[in-house]
Length: 197
Image (cartoon, rainbow, N blue to C red; front, top):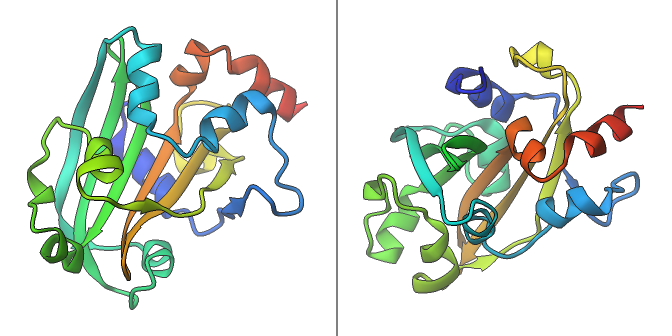
């Protein structure tokens, strides 16, 4: 049902989506949603705790490819730039909770001296927050109002966030789409329905 990688990639490429910063007008969020979308800490660590330790990474797509226009803009790269793209599910208790897309420009690979293309089923969070000494930039969020238009199999709106992890002039862009299965775990459906009312 929610394991359609093509649909989630379509969401990330949606040209109609408007990313917002928390302080922008009209960017109000219920506290329960903001608690996850705007948390500057490691999402991986939170999911490990919520899942009772039953957390895993499911690799979906890993290869060098052309970046989306919105990703080039966020990373301040020329349109059509290439980089390493990694798409995964962050799963808890055997269920996909979050779809994540990480974009790593070639210059970042050279700068870190570590091959980030071989993470496999290991999370990138510990590297970004620890070993590689990246600094997280402002968190942007969006709400995909019309999920059906993007081929989703749910009428519920989907929340997503993205942020740039910076080291000097270089950055890695991480985008995360919180799936309905995640909100079901943390009592989110009632929150989402309230926003639709």
